[in-house]
Amino acid sequence: MTVVLLHGLCGSPDYFDALEPLIEAETYALTLPGHNGQEAGPETMDAFADWVIEQIRLRDIKRPLVLGHSFGGYITTNLVRRYPDELSGFGLIHSTAASDTAEAKEKRNQAIERVIEEGVHPFIDTMIPGVFAQDSKASLVERAKQIGYTMSKEGIVSAQRAIRDRVDETDTVRHTGLPGLFLYGEKDPNMNETRAFLGAEHHTRRKLPVSHMGMMEAPEEEARLINIWLKEEFHGTV
Image (cartoon, rainbow, N blue to C red; front, side):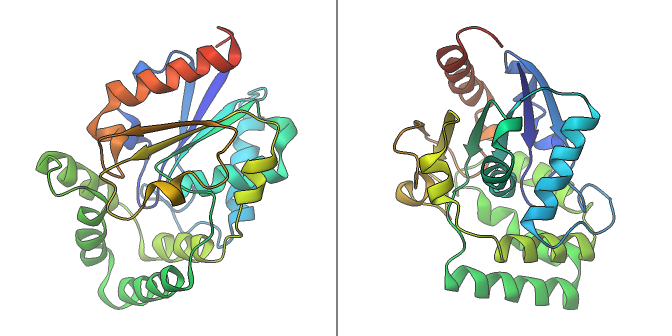
């Protein structure tokens, strides 16, 4: 069994530097289009998901477990709906199966305008601290900002449009036959428990005392929960 990790908006595989070596399975962390110094990516969630499936096929990975952080989680739920036969399971790491609210869509429009007008650095300087808790380590916030600075304007805009326009996947995860893991950080400044666990009634749900960036803040604990889930759901086949 193989685990594929998908990072969040304005992130990179570096988000998983501390977590990935602790996962007890063969693991691949992909760099999503438009991120980590790349040109702009797609503008739809379907296209991002198609790209991920293409990468999985190119690597000849057979029915992996896809674990997505935040934006990566939105891509993951799209995969669950459109490519269920090519997955063995999925995980939402500080993410949600729900679509954006009207208020959230407007905030994304404002973010797009700001990036176009002011550039990448001012956007990252606001966005990244906003996904950490007030008591998060300053060094981790700075590390995430440095990763974010590698984005292009076009990369941020295209990803924001895909996120804004994604469909609600709550019923997708609620009715899928694939096993799922939902991890929620109780200090997440932009997410509550109800939204994090929408559609997860029949899946594994776990809470941690971390922010939206728990894989950086508490990689040992997140890895422990992931490894327990892997062993329970897949009976030591990882």
